Image (cartoon, rainbow, N blue to C red; front, side, top):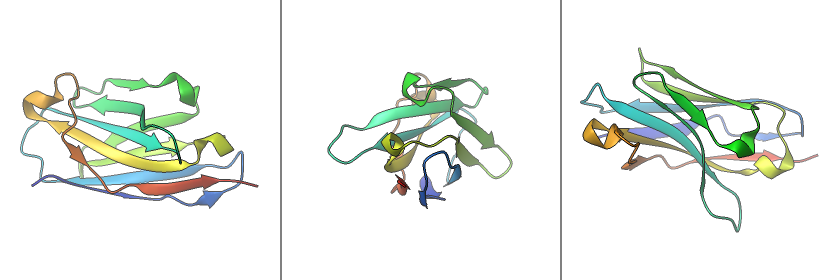
Length: 121
């Protein structure tokens, strides 16, 4: 079965940086789409960005170029580099994946447990 395990969340000061990791396993298809989502307290879950098996990436406007998604295909680990962090970035960050035909349109059907990012002074 597909499993996604996030790590790297921490408490940092505004302007700081973090790198989140998502270790994926159990993929049986060469076609996939992986993404980062986040959910702040009392707010709806929102997409941060995605990358697919063709290397195509996209980001939500809310991150304003501060975040970077990358994928190590060798060990199938997804990364999210967060720079110039703001208090508004405080949220639980989730890794998600879509595999096989679900990769078309990134119809995510696998989710990690999340990792907490807290940005405060």
